[in-house]
Structure formats: C-alpha cells, structure tokens
Amino acid sequence: MAQGWGDGLPLIPPTQARVQDFLIAGGRFPDELIAVLPPLRAECTVEKIAINAVMAGCTGESMPLLCAAIEAMADPKFDLAGLNATTGSVVPALIVNGQIRNRLDIPCQAGCLGGVAGPAVAIGRAIRLIMRNVAGQLIGATSQSVYGTPGRVAGILFGEWEERSPWAPLAERRGVQGDAVTAYGAMGTANICDVVANSADGFLDMIAKSMAYPGANGFLPSSAFAETLCVINPIWAEVIARAYPRMEDVQAYIWDKCALPIDWFRPEYRDPIGNLGRIKPDGRVHLVPSPDDVLVMVAGGEGGLHAAMLHSWGTCLTVTRPVASA
Image 1 (cartoon, rainbow, N blue to C red):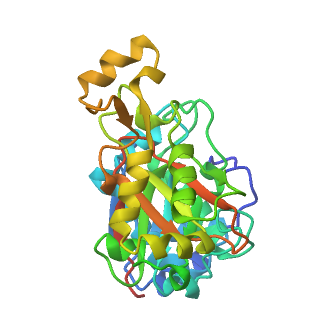
Image 2 (cartoon, helix red, strand yellow; image 1 turned 30 degrees about the vertical axis):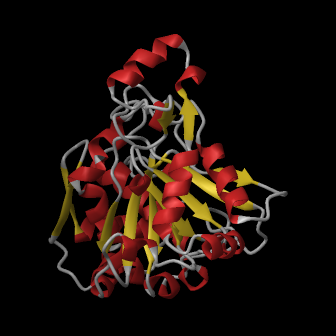
C-alpha cells in the first residue's frame, strides 16, 4: 500500500519464487509484450501480469485467461483509454466461454454476478490491479469517475451457462469457438424482475422495456452508438427459445421494444438526438443502433423471475479473444 500497489484489500507478496511459478504455469516468456495500456501507455508484459495475479490471490492456471483478457481490452475498438479516464463508472465486464470456464471454476449459475466464493474473484481483482499498477488508472488523477463501482475493485467476471443455453455460446456467435473471453464495457449490473409473465413475449417485453430508460448512456445526445448486454436465466431462455429459436430474432425483438418516444425527452435533447439521425420515422429513439448491438447470453440460477442488464458506456465496442492453452 505504501508503494501505491494496493486496492485497500490484503495483498500476497509477489516474491520471485511465486512469480516464477506463475510464469511457468502460463507457458510464456516473462518479457513477452501483451499490450500497451492507457492512460500511461505502459508496456504490460507477461511478468507484470503474473506479479499482479500473485498479489490478487490468483492461481497460476489463470494466466492464459488473464493474458487473453488484457489483449481483448487493449484492442483499439474497446477504447480502454476513454474507459479508464471517463467521468462514468464503466468497468470491463469479462465473459468466459468454453471448457476453461469449468477448469477455473468461473461462476455461470446462481450468483454468477457476485457472491460466489472461488477463483473468479481473484482473477477479476487481478485485472483491476493491472489497470491500477500498470495502466495507471487512479481516481482523481488519471480517472475522473464521479462515483466508480464495486466492479473497479473485484472486477466483473462470469461465465455463460452454455449447457443450459438453447442458442450457440456468445463467443461462438462472435466468431470464436472453444475457450474465449469477451470484454464488454459495462456501467455496472442491474436486476430485471418479473413475477407475472409466462410467455416468451412477456419475458422479452419486460427485459427490453426495463433496459430503455432515459439516463442510459445509449440515449445520450453525445452517443452516436452504443451496445447493451442482457443476461437471461435458463428457465426464461427455454421459454423464449421455443418461440424464437434464432438468436437474431431475440435480438430484433429486444431492439424493437428497447426504445423511447422522442417526446419523452425534454425539448433541449431533441435536436441533438435528431442531428445524430437517431429518430426513426415512427418518432422513437432506440437505445442501440441495430439488433446486432444487443448482446444476449444465458447465465444465472434456476429460480427464474430475474434477468440482468449491463448497459454499455457508449464508446466501447465489445471484443472477443481466444484463450490459448498454457
């Protein structure tokens, strides 16, 4: 903590022996450059990832996932420079697909967004320490985040419950099969609850209309584009898939209902939104530009009643990367 390496929680000293064990487990050279991370434009090597992974309490087996996650976040499309510096509370949400999800015990069932004891907490924390210690994201200095989020301490890291999904895995739909990690710029997590609906349209209506609230970043007059992420529990997913077996139709349904009339916005917002070409002929403004910008996946417990929404910050574009074997 005196050196500025900590996040306020206890740290495991990154001794030479411990770091060496992680490097061996990762199967890559210590000086291999994984990415250059803003805002400091600092070189993030395999060794620096190992050091922070040790401090966070990870196991060495997490090194391939950590390296792939940093690679995804450093893609220019993800806009890590803006994410790390903005006034918003955005944090990378990392979604894991493939068998590595099971090998590392990444939660994808009940409590997957927080509260499950296991390695995922330390892996998420390691990502956050890398953002602090290597990238240089510090509140009040290089980051102007007004509120921040608990996700900036432990991260947001969870898996997709592929075995219970009636659709292809998220990463596969994004062009990466097998072990993969997807980086999504999330403004935190929020719950969607419905105790009445019992049909596909009922579930999707509640999801879409809940996501469409005026303060979401996707509706900002300064936002030319945005994405949004919906996590559907396996019980609802089964019902929805019987009516909409194609994921494209699910995305299209949510996109269509996830909109607000331009009249809902105060007059001073209407011209800026209109100047972006975002007002449709029917007078509605959609949260995201197209159905492809609606990301949908299956995870969570079997209790039903709930879905989760993770709104995007706006300028981040989701990136998926394969996770290499050690």
